[in-house]
Length: 136
Image (cartoon, rainbow, N blue to C red; front, side, top):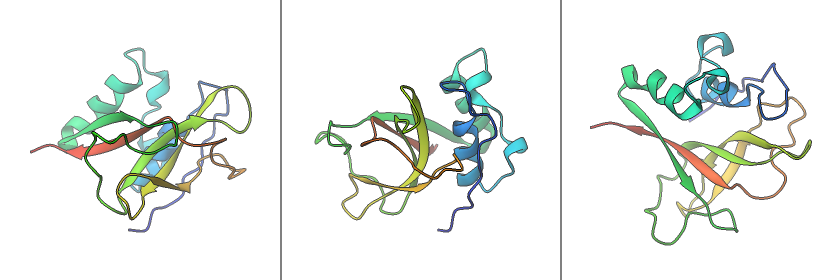
């Protein structure tokens, strides 16, 4: 699967639109065709799931181990699946999110698209991974 890089346009620490840009990359949309979930008063999780609902999908966050992998009790994910990976920003004491793909183990993640134009991804490993699940 080839993903299109969409860059964020708001660089406000903890309130920028990196999350919006990541979803635009995964869904091959223009930035303006995806809501800025962080700005939604319902909170970003509610906003994401409201946007995904008509597409019969749900967004699920999974906490990662200190090594940045899925915990032993979690099921492995599909190799190559695009996910959102949240960790520490390399540009300050705030979080950042990037697009990653699931590696060959099904338990670790390869950063693939950084929505920030400096392309420095995360400072260290991810803290949680966001998976887009197709509802049955």
